[in-house]
Length: 544
Image (cartoon, rainbow, N blue to C red; front, side, top):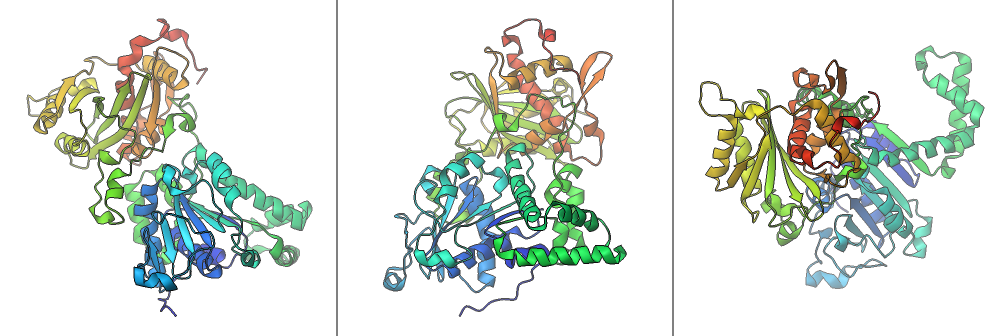
């Protein structure tokens, strides 16, 4: 028997560990312990159903391999199961072991994306951005979706969920047979809101067991501190518990939200102090405290829709595949970007501020009339333009077109303090130092906010055949997307203006303020004259 190390489980982890419901949706803050639960569920399925076949699905393979799998492997080791002894990832066991090493009842032909356990059970690693990881075809006894808010629900419904069925008749009695678990942080985008359907389904099950009247009474009583409940209320609670316990075997769905505070014993109070200090209030509330995202009213970009304008299938795996599973030699550069078009020159757009220098990288794909925002970079906390340009040049060093157009803030033409050098001089010098050929295209005048509002939203709306469509890499431009979503508009005597108060708010991280949204405006300015109509002000998005 493997030697196990004692493991601490926090309350939500214990709730999941002893829950027999086959469908689980767990939306937990960062640091709550999702990886431990993921590892436990997978390990339990492996041993409860020897020779079974399950899957772990993620939005992209890079995320699974470099972020999600390492903590699961560490937990399996604490449980006494060691890689290359009890299981193998992406390869067969040694030749001399194969005769005694069983196979799954439904054994895949390839081992490339497989975790093959000593009892014949296999776990298939599936990502929707790789066609070769086996999301189509076959049967699976169980499934686990990690960072599920990033998973496309339509593809889950079409390709994976119908494939969850027993691969052997002996598995039908197992509580893990046909089980499906989704774990995620709180969805930051509306694309992940499908996860909340499980909350409605769990509530419907509860009402069916208790009856609507008793359920409503119970919801009201839950708002009262247990110490302050009267005798009648305590009797109702006891009755509810009896009815729910009696119907335990009938329950199918578990929906559980949890905050990282539940894991205080492991994280310590200093973890929360650090996160509060380094994250913006919005990100802290969503990512750590698990608050649901609210949409700001009066957005400066009302026609921006993440489901339309943000894409996540952007990774190339040629570089990663060449390393096998030796991720220590992995280098994060443009070789991992499938959306980068070879031969097409890069363009960059910058915003200069005393707190932060912001930069986005994009390509204009003339043949399809699209502007593709590839990546964002920033420098702050004492870093300068030299560091920013070094990051850009290092990341795109292997791109086969070393010419770049430079757009941005008109303030870039101003001389730096105590220097005759302008911001743009420093940018161009940084590019030249790394053997890039550059062309400065930034306008020397302010771009009026009302014009930005009209034209950028026309592009997002896709209503003008002469204006390019805009698409944004959601994996590489997280700060840009947050900035677009969090930037409001305001009405003034001179018309619609961008509300830039976030740039002065000490509680908001500079990279989440309106700076990055400005780089988008500057990047798209070159297309403003391509509009189908000349009277821009005649187009309206409604009252703010």
